[in-house]
Length: 71
Image (cartoon, rainbow, N blue to C red):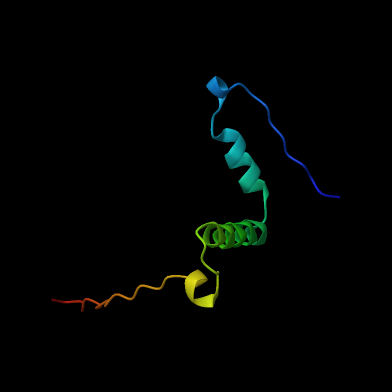
């Protein structure tokens, strides 16, 4: 059975607690899948076709040098 979350409050009483509680109650898979679908929607709205190149995770590489003890 799917759990449905709903909240109706005046705009003046909106806070982030409800959003935080909702997303923390979701599995990491559910959060990742929802984020992925939002990215696909974003590209479609912009008129771009989502594909593996546009939706790949960004990878940054930095040079890391280990300091030697005794110096």
